[in-house]
Image 1 (cartoon, rainbow, N blue to C red):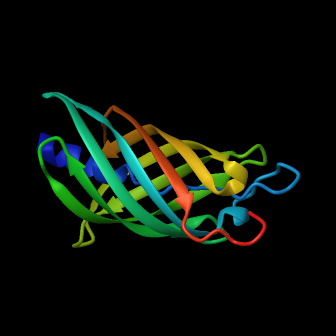
Image 2 (cartoon, rainbow, N blue to C red):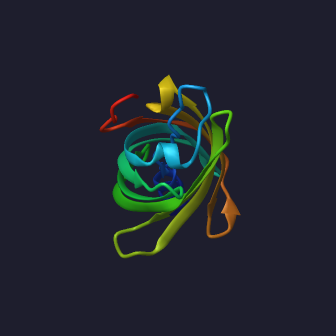
Length: 162
């Protein structure tokens, strides 16, 4: 059960979940959810704190974010127990004008079963081409699992002017 929780948490780290939500910074320094629309690639590493001890994890993935802040994607993850998994991610992103924001991520296995949910805080950097995130919370079956992890994302296909 603990391994299943850790695996689910790692997969949620997506950020996705994943991802990395990034709003494009405008010339005047104002960011928006619509400005971050596009294709993103991301990596995340960290540690899950479970009753049996700390478990390291890593993941890599990509996602597509629309102008309303809704995203979906895929990711591969690995835990300190040697478990590797392919998951899908879905969620929402909200961007503040000061280029900070919050992302809510749900991670699913290939059968479509919900594995975990996460809330991440982020800051947009490099004129909207990159984002830095930290996990605020992560749950599995309604149980909070402490996580110390970061996620970094970068636009896959920058548009002109970025």
